[in-house]
Image (cartoon, rainbow, N blue to C red; front, side, top):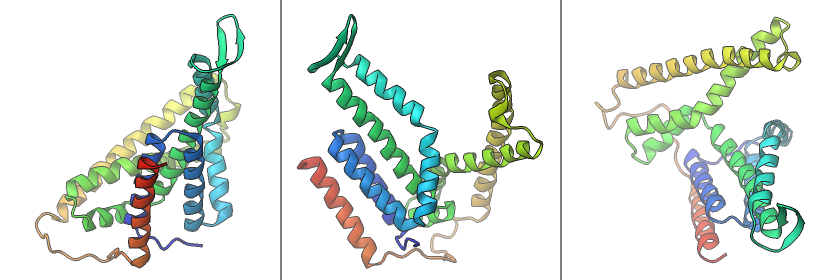
Length: 243
């Protein structure tokens, strides 16, 4: 099932959800945002593809989630004590904050996945419709697309190692670090070169010279886009001011 939502609608939803996640840190709100983000992701892609990709991504972050939870549990000293052994003290407040921080990170990953699925051209069209200058639009698009583009190139370079019968998992820690450095440097260089090429292309198209120029594709808002954007604003204000 393919989503028919406009890019601007997805951006508005992502901004509303991410703001709620940062401002409201209680467990109920975090779980509610997770449910909404999952629904939006399912609407954009097939369920199997979505959950297999998310499972793969979250699998790489579970150590970070666990470490952050442990730090919150150990260093939050206020609240009712559940367990104490010498200087080690576990409180209800520590457990509560540990869970909320982990849920917040999961939410940010889900919301980022919403934004990462949008192409650079779709971002440019969305920002153009909002009358944002092309220079600023280009910078914002480059920042948002940097991680997915970087990861895509990293996987492509890593695949070349597999073709040479080099499996990173089977290497020692020292060799793993050497291989990762050898992969990251060309990937970073390629991304920087791509940014420069797109910047030159932007100037060559003379966007600032013809403010009334037309486009091959026009991303127009429909009735459902206006409705969803309005509901996103209402939900955001309700959660921030009332809930």
